[in-house]
Image (cartoon, rainbow, N blue to C red; front, side):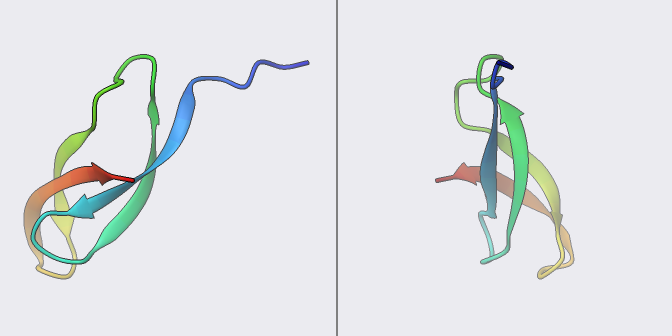
Length: 53
């Protein structure tokens, strides 16, 4: 049997709008919540995105 792995699917939600996108992260390398500065197509500019459950 194959090992399942440590990658999990997460939702990233914009801090300034309702826009959400899905991505993956390795829970062994980064167990804390992820926070990235990404492009928000609703606002048409870069904003902070935080991991949302």
